[in-house]
Length: 467
Image (cartoon, rainbow, N blue to C red):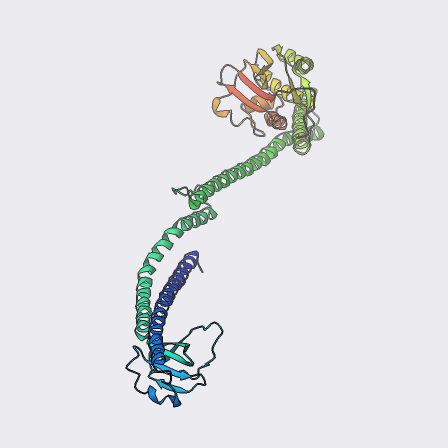
């Protein structure tokens, strides 16, 4: 059963039961009040006729003597139908329209007046009974008050209420239907949107106004849909990167291995002049060095992806002093001037990883034809920014978002000649992630590149927890 049907039936049942119960209680309340009023009237009639009976007994104490033979003509003296009984139950006189099966003529200690409601042939009466004593004689007086009009009125009220009840139910059904539809329409929209997302339309959103629970549900659903869309896009991008990685890796292996096998086969099968042998061996050596660089970079990436590192508090000046020893020979080999500026401040870092990051960035800079290389470390607010800047060829702005992808090269031909594997920036990005730092790359594609990495400023002498 759908939610719409459940809510509709619940509304109908609750409304029907509530209205019926309210009507029942109201009619019963009215009936109780009416019976109470009739009892008061019956009591007043009884008291008045009791006075009449006491007057009779007072004027003639022997009025009901000798079997009550003198009571036959007193019916005209009572204002309502009445009956008089002796203490032993003797019936002296009765003008009652309906008689009970049996009276229990037992005088109570507190002279309590008894009320009884009787019905016969559609007529209903209240009988009031009490013991009346006057002088030395005592009798039981029973008076009768007709309450049939009141009961007929109650029946008419019940019949009228049932008509109203049916009419209101007929009117309320369309209203309940519309209210239920209005309540379930937003939920239906959420369900339809969820179905479209399940079919692959991850850009689906719900436009819904309001600050009630349904509005909050719509906001939560849109946030969920946005997260799903982002995660799907992220997974799709990761899948594409893995496919590109596998394709690039296969290509990186295929090209040099084909050449190495070809040249090796040529050396093995033929007797070549020394110059050709030397050239073939040189090409094999060059491709072997590139394969070695590729394997080492891949090993670093895989190891860093599975290993935890403890970051220790280290001063920038001390770290940069050690960096000069590693970057200096690289700059001399490519004819670039090295400029190192180390300010105050400490960061949480693994020095070996930090050095690997700096060497990869410096290697990219000098291979890009840079004449000067700046390595700068300075404190900026709550961070220490490490900047490696060059004045080489630069990176086209449209390529900046891709250079951290594995096997991506800005200049593929130059990278191959310099034994580049296209994994250096991917390695740098992984090291930055391990340190919880933030990397920014700036270049106009003409006048060099600046890579800045912002590390958290270390305070005190404690060590950073394992991450």
